[in-house]
Image 1 (cartoon, protein in one colour):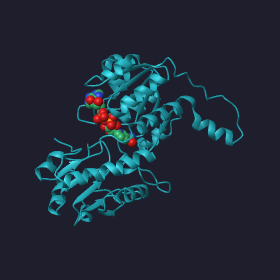
Image 2 (tube, rainbow, N blue to C red):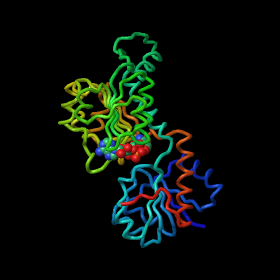
Image 3 (cartoon, rainbow, N blue to C red):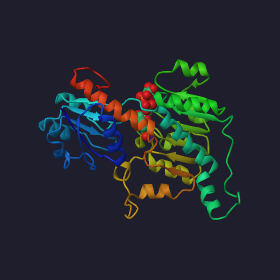
Image 4 (cartoon, rainbow, N blue to C red):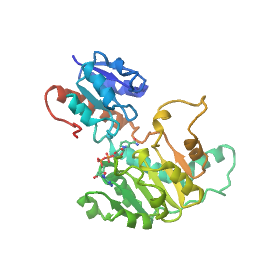
Length: 330
Ligand code: NAI
């Protein structure tokens, strides 16, 4: 039976994968460290490495994996910007991913960030626990009737757009391909400049690519409505964080909710509560009262974890049966 070595494995990964594996029977070995040049040797003897968002899979690492006999890189996530797919192909290593796992999980988390920023429930919770029942500083706005811009209407953006329609919002969308079903439901496709000029809330759901890196930057932020709310549950690199901080300081950006962060790989998925954080940018972000940061937890629901482990193991099974399933191609 083939062996799968897991990097960046958290206790919940072990729990869900072991449960799902009872119907597959692979040999599983879990490591909590990230895949890096100095940890690649842990995959010795593995047929498959199973990695997550902040594992590195550049050409040098892929060469070492190939030399160790690894045949497949199984991403237990949707994004694959951390894998050099061309290098994997050159070494005859397959790359598979989980293209969609409960898109609702991520869309609903984007809504949670939006509503927390708007109605300040995080502050209200702490206040009431301190017997402070005053409302000063908790003023929000009706989401009903507002204009919401959705960038990227794939699985997640689509789910988010539908929720926003349910809130009674005017939904504008931008994507390289328009989704006819969304249009039929009342979503209007537009270009980014028009969306930026009119949206009260903007939510990012497109992939991180060279063409989308820092799509939210000093120039684009300046074209947005003053006080706009920006939500990013996609990938940190879509936003130039320093430009966002500048826009928060001068009020151009009214509030920011992020589940992803450009430099997250040194921080997220770890308990650093006893450490001195060296990243001054996130420290500055954390100091704003109108910024909510969650640590890449948008996907984190029971339904999503069940789907992730099941689809990953099915991808592995299909690969060894010679079938093309959820393969990432160049
Ligand atoms: P998807 O592949 O279904 O949809 C992405 C959409 O973006 C597609 O419709 C595509 O045409 C569109 N797109 C491509 N280039 C674009 C551009 N330049 N401008 C606007 N749209 C563009 O992907 P899905 O499942 O909806 O995921 C979206 C992103 O969410 C992923 O790329 C991933 O980075 C992120 N994600 C975050 C999670 C979290 O826990 N925070 C969990 C899962 C995904």
